Length: 263
Ligand code: DAK
Image 1 (spheres, rainbow, N blue to C red):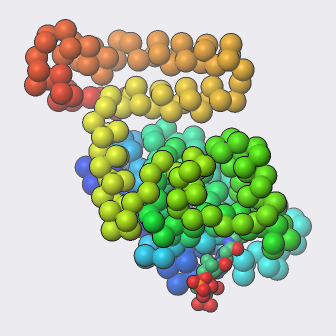
Image 2 (cartoon, helix red, strand yellow):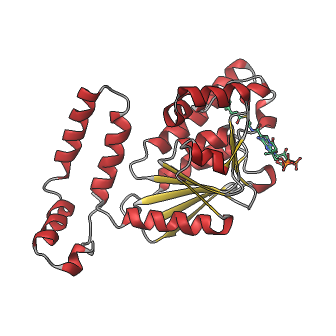
Image 3 (spheres, rainbow, N blue to C red):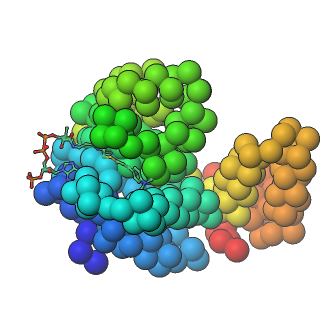
């Protein structure tokens, strides 16, 4: 791979978009490599992913403006689909994905972070949807995911004004869960990922699916989704061992030392 690296650290996979000369902007090749990288993740040995950008300045500075500048309507639509397919695959990926936003997260960069489950960022992070200043709309789900994450009023303000916001404001409006000095960001992401990976993987996966699917429907349907995914946990090794350890009153085992299953 030319633009994406993958590193396995125990149960945690770290995906780095590695095109620092262009501030990790998303061109077709980056999107294709991201797609291939996610498809290649071994779900038997991986329980949580971290997505970050190479370098100390930028997470992803958006879709590649040079590549987009000459697109026809049909090509623009195809490029939008390529990005949307990858972003949706991240959003619905069976295991949690943490975005460690280490700098600029503009346009497609903000959008890819929003397709992750959790966003944490460094103090130098900058978020924004500058597309209307470029004569286009956010095309990788920005109009939809930003409104769902921070509310329609705030999303409309950010998108209509094309104003960038710094890390502290992103934290204040709930776009990110926490802000760290740059050097502490990846360690914090790894610590969070390891904490997730220490829990029962089937239950964690089912929680992700329950939250994602439930948000698309009304509460009556959402509760049914939850019931099914709750029921699905029973009779698994995870459930038997997890509850068994509690009932055994074995302090050591209660501290999640059970060898949870992935399937
Ligand atoms: N695309 C391509 N190259 C980029 C880039 C980008 N988005 N952002 C930065 N670069 C490149 C610069 O061209 C420069 O390359 P060289 O000149 O060195 O070859 C290098 O990265 C360093 O950038 P700067 O020299 O500009 O660095 P500065 O520190 O001065 O400024 C900056 C950093 C992030 C403020 C600035 O680079 C900037 O404003 N970048 C553009 C940010 C932006 O507008 N991003 C949003 C892009 S629009 C759709 C699909 C997708 C989308 C929309 C529709 N459909 C098809 C429906 C998504 C759109 C977007 O994401």
